Picture 1 (cartoon, rainbow, N blue to C red):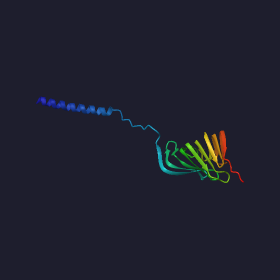
Picture 2 (tube, rainbow, N blue to C red):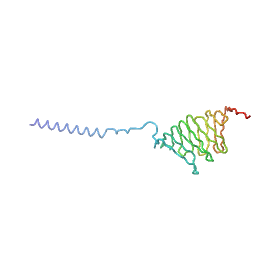
Picture 3 (cartoon, rainbow, N blue to C red):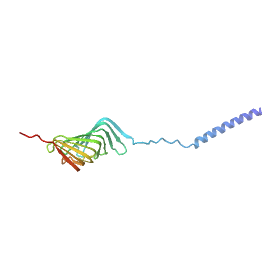
Picture 4 (tube, rainbow, N blue to C red):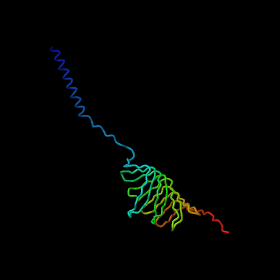
Length: 193
């Protein structure tokens, strides 16, 4: 009987030792690390098949952009657009309609980078002839109504094609300026008999 009692006390002692050891392991274990996200910043929202109108400080239309996908970044409030179609207006409200491979617009809409192939077209207006502009990587300032690029550019107007490297445009004065290596091709006009 004495032997049975010792055996039972030994088993109880081992159970208590195991329980104390387990509690000590739980208390001394390092905390689990939270998984960290590594990769591009997360967007605060995305839109599919959207159209957006941006107004200037005067409340008038500054530009319109539409496209298949818009992503807004919460870190800086900027907007990224895939294959946008856009309209910028001059001071008289005449539209310049364009498209590009992608676009980035800063938070307040004062800076827009049109990336990849860029095409802009102006219809006939009172003070200016129709024109189509082809270039790449154009930086536009819709509120100031100006744009520029250092890339090769081509300006097509009825009867002529201007080519050059670097371009500046001012929609307020309706002036397009090629900066270097400029050449012009004139289409012949038919003779009147």
